[in-house]
Amino acid sequence: MNNWEKVKLGSILTESKIEAIDSDKDSRIRVLLNTRGIIKRPLKKETKDATKYFKRSAGQFIYGKQNLHKGAFGIIPRELDGFTSSSDLPAFDIDKSCLPEWLDYFLKQGCFYLSLIDIAKGAATKRIQPKALFEIELPLPNSIKEQQRLVKSFKNKESYIELLDGEIQTQKQLITQLKQAILQDAVQGKLTQEWREQNPITEPANELLERIKAQKEQLIKDKKIKKEKTLPPITEEQIPFKIPENWSWVRLLGLCSKTGSGSTPKGGKSAYIESGIKFIRSQNVYNDGLRTKDIAYISNKLHEKMKGTKVESEDLLLNITGGSIGRCCIVPSNFDTGNINQHVAIIRSIDKNLSYFLHKIICSSYFQKTIIEVQTGAGREGLPKNKMDEILIPLPPETERKIVVDKVDNLMQICDSLELEISQNEQHANKLIQAVLKEAFQN
Image: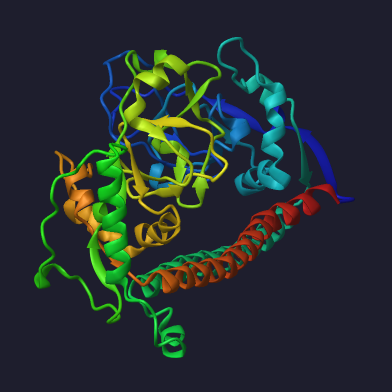
């Protein structure tokens, strides 16, 4: 760095203020966050003459005043030459003494841009004005050839890291596919085939079903649960795949003492309070468990009014609408009480031990595909109770059911360990180019 000097950005940047005449709304620029570049903004409705636009040129530096510290900056590519942006996305001509890519890499190095939050000003909305940007000092090699050499080196390393990232993404997809294969093998009895060969004499699942039926009838007799509608018989044509001989097909409701969705409290969000009874929404339900970080709360009085939506420990909660449809969790065994909204359904097994097996079934590709097939609504986005109740469940004998759960859990732990390793590699790859750039600019 003996032939490098530090220059203020104001000495190499000149703001471009060429007003666009008859600006076309289909030629707007968007600056993406997290240093993801500059793209054409999707076409959207505009109020005529409400905003002044300025013509931008390829090779100019552009940034978002509100989001520079979030990585909203870059060099305008050739394909966006002549496009426009408002003054909230100012653009700058760069002096010939500095390669545009050099400035771009400088702001990326070590996530330097994150520190620029300190120069943002404003009361309601903080912005980084050009005047503040101009005070930043840039290490600048005197020779353009030296800049070109270093930029070429950076690009080569970026290409390598992109390949590495592509491999990591492939590995993540493979792990996801492996998890689904494990669940599907569990659902079809393939996972425990060897166990059955070693344990040929077991009570068949139909005897377990008879006990469950008797338990359910007793609960109805004792008025602990309501009598449900009679489920239609299972026909040969409805069976989706072959299962072991001592397994049985049963409709979901046949294994449950309760199924059904929750409801929205009167007053909607205004009914939420700072603390009280947990009110579970779809954003709290994930396959790996119930997430309570951003959970809502309702009063005990409202909780009692909504008694039909009360949640118990070891219930299954299933998202039944929207983009998260199919996500399912088991309520922890130490859970006290709570309620659900209309986007979540309770699936309460007659035998709570069944919940852990049913969770594997629900997370399988078989069950998830079935949900998609039976959805209703304008956008096919809802799973009604009657359709959910009738979904076919492959049920193993009680002893084998426990083996299935244990085998799936053990294999999923191995997958989780692999996922963690891949995630660490991904973080390392993301930091690698930052470290390379930081070393170059600070040495």
